[in-house]
Image 1: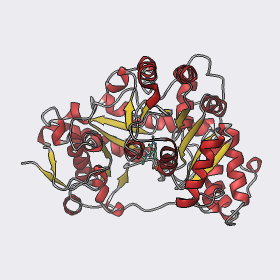
Image 2: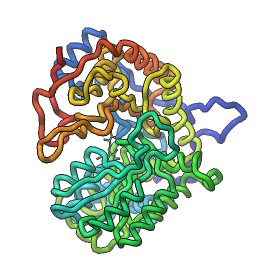
Image 3: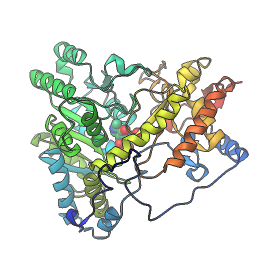
Image 4: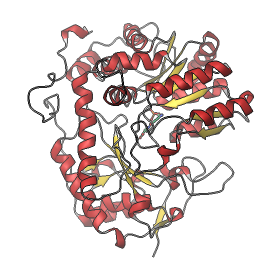
Amino acid sequence: MVAPEAVLEWGAPAMNFKTIIEPFRIKSVEAVKFTTREDREAALTQAGYNVFRLRAEDVLIDLLTDSGTGAMSAAQWSAIMQADESYAGSRSFYRFEAVVRDLTGFTHIIPTHQGRAAERILFHTVLKAGDVVPNNNHFDTTRANVEVEQAEALDLVIPEGRVPHLIHPFKGNVNLDALERLLAEQGNRVPLVMVTVTNNSGGGQPVSMENLRGVRAICDRYRKPFFLDACRFAENAWFVKQREAGYADRTPKSIAQEMFSLADGCTMSAKKDGLANIGGFLAMNSDAWADSARTLLILTEGFPTYGGLAGYDLEAVARGLEEVVEESYLRYRIRSTEYLGDKLIAAGVPIIRPTGGHAIYLDARALLPHVPPLQYPGIAVANELYIEAGIRGVEIGTVMFGLHPDGTETPSAMDLVRLAIPRRVYTQSHIDYVAEAVISVAQSRERLRGYRIVSPPRTLRHFTAIFEPLA
Ligand code: F0G
């Protein structure tokens, strides 16, 4: 096992120059494939005009997701080689558990193969039909895992969080009045309260510590457990450090620890701020809930000391959770996303502002006012970006969220195209290319047309739907 103290810190502290550089150098590279416009048109037609159905090798710059797509460090790879693959009681589990406990303070640490497995186990354990789960915004799988239990996933983000161009330092905040009202009026239907940090569906926007304390106080008043969807906890901690009074001198790790200390548990996808290609966990203080969760875990994921992961995955996550809170990493990470945002804003491209942590969100509804939401402006923009430049983003809008469990379809709050930036993967010149391509697509906006769905799957339709361009 690689002792943390034997590993060099990421990058150097701020030097005397203002250019923020990648706090690493590159030891191993992977070639990307250049294609022609004709190749891409053929590939997209073949894929039913759904970029999820493309072969990844036909994509030049893949901004589909920041999940599981990051580059691991040499320290993570070396920890992988040292892993213990024992079925029960593996050394790698205890290392993983120690790191997660040090960070979160929770009593029970339950590994899962990714975030949605933690969600499924938690929700199947605690929800019954007719329940309501409030959140700032549920992400797609979180919402689906609530709805599959015949419960309602209720989004209570502050009103500012639904207006793309509006500047607010913590657009991921929960509307505390609405949460209080829900608990006062229908508290018996709410088994737990969730908050997603950062708020992915709302633009990778942070939640302030003050807001989290407000949620905690309301949960205390109504005796409700409070869980974080913690996928991007480190990015949230960095925004708190930058934007919230009283946190400037704190380390990201201590801010993260304070954040977790306000909650009773969390679900986590280690594919994001775990800096790993796979992995996650469910953590909590409740003995009773943990007991039921572990029983379900054994049934579907694996023994509680590996939970669907290899010992080497547990090592990669443990090391990743230590690296992700390094200041030099977070400074570079958030700045490099903002760098792309700044270029697009300067060119007049409508995006969610301020720039979020892990992604740029193009406001497809504002970009294509001539394409109504039910003709999916987000799909039109995402597809054009692929055809034009080989870049893959993802629609976060009416296709992803517009279909309801009763089969009706309505426009979602926003129609966005997310360009998620994998961690430690692309360089500044890749990002310059992305900016140039997006600006070019924005300039040809009038040409773009909407789509219709020809094969609508019932749940999570965005993953597999087949589209047809409208004339
Ligand atoms: N919660 C949030 C806020 C997420 O963004 C995701 C995944 C999950 C839960 C589920 O985690 O993928 O490990 O099962 N988001 C990815 C994305 C897929 O592209 O944003 P998972």
